Image (cartoon, rainbow, N blue to C red; front, side, top):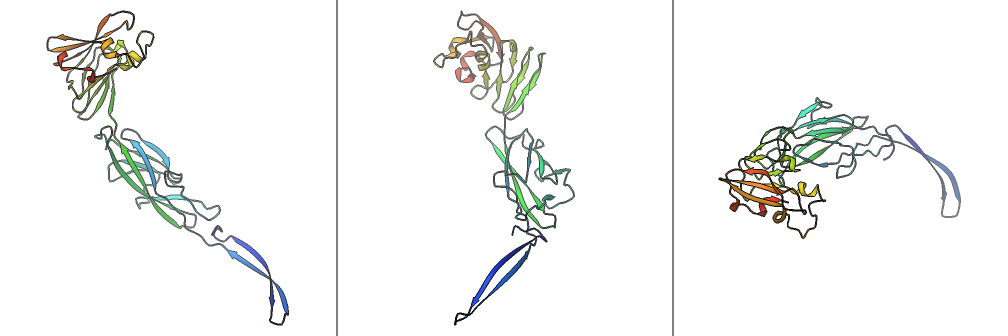
Length: 285
């Protein structure tokens, strides 16, 4: 089977024939084998991608189920169709799901979720697929399927060093205000409000939902081990976080001196939530 179309191999055998009375005759037998074309073999592929990222791969490579192959020596393979259509090879194809694929003749492709799966939250997934056909230089073909798992991720939104209004979505969001006096609105879902340094202070969180949303302060403490303990036995929330009532709101303060002394300064204001409604479980420290 390894012989390519038109390729030959010669086998020579010495054959001796002996009859029942012991008379023998020897001959040399020469057999020439001529190769015929064998079809290529395309194997199904499996890839995984986050809902907000493209993936770049090649269908000829081992994507979880082995390489595409051809037993014929020196066979040249190319991709000729996507979803049984040969008109879009090398250009962007809209899949029935709404995702986009650009599949080239050399097997390389880009899969773009195209925003279709943005509603997936972290821990959720969806599936998509497309078929492709490969051919050798003599036109023999085989078809396989690329199976795509799309993994949901929480939407990540960054502010700027200036004053920002950061608005989340109805799904889970991660909001990072950074510098400036920012207004953060998570909207629906389970949202995480991230603070990376004391320089991110003076923000207002407008719609914090107790027991659902959380405020992440751990980078403030992790990034300065000279004043904040990294020992697992230290209760950072008790030691370094202070909740004060300000009307119907809560002012979150942190100890900017860490282990040296208690110097608490305002970091953020949680609107329309009082300190007695909050606990350590609403914070990541």
